[in-house]
Image 1: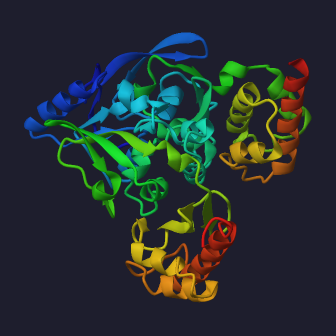
Image 2 (image 1 turned 90 degrees about the horizontal axis):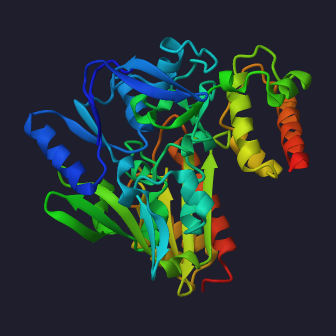
Length: 279
Length: 160
């Protein structure tokens, strides 16, 4: 049982959501946006999260869009992970989010919720970093489209009252060769020891990681090493590992040494899978 | 816009084809509401963390962990609990295949299997496994459950 009371609002439009946020906040109340709500409910139950009011974004039509529009793939923030996977609109994203939690949970978890998760994994981030995605953000100043890599700095950095409406990806990214690897400790359902997504673009590998460091990332320095064709595969991986942006996580899921071991194997698998498409 | 204050209020839930009035807090989960307000005890309280699948119900025909849904966000949507599948062929199949043992996880497995049969009757073994990984059986009766699920899907396919 959630041990505190809160108000619930489900607006029908972006304007109504923004206005509601401002109205509630002006009363000195703590208000948060709510999408799938799985993390809100589980964290609230154990007193790790609280709010005076939640604004459910699932009633906003723009947040439910999942379509190909001109040169863009448009994915609403309130679309469930299963719908994204089943649509096959952006296969790499579909594959990556299919590895989050379990099938039943993925009917409730939304892509917006995954990107904003308080857990370190947020595997939906990886394909968006690789695909130079853009995000449409709503706020009291109106709507704006920003590069995902500018908004996602180790975590989603949105201003007060802002929320994610949609993710925009150039359609061409749906056709690049890709691989998505998730290695768990034991069962198929579980947090990743290492999660890796990679694509081959212009004969170069692009790779992004989750579970390795305390946040999901893509590193230009690591990619430079992985794409250095003057080196053996073994040396490329060794160089890439020396350029990790942060220490490798060492926790109950896996020791630092084991994660590094699994990461090396995952990189070997990724380079092997994409070898025909990269130099 | 749907609004619900921080105190208790009366809302309608559409469960198993009937409309029911319930008195809820915004913070009440659907699991708690189904069990405490409507006496529908088929959805089981276990992990309350979305890990075990014992509380599985269907919302709009999709399996959901009722411990991970608020009752207030489920209004205006058709909800199916195990009580809505009373004496159905799928229940009989689970009994015939002895996919029941202690029975605590069974409602969740049956509802998940029902949704699978309705949406993907030709599901491959891989898809069946993907769906059923959402439910845990502490008796570890997975082989019998797998046989029951396959029998249900086969029956559905033959009908089609």
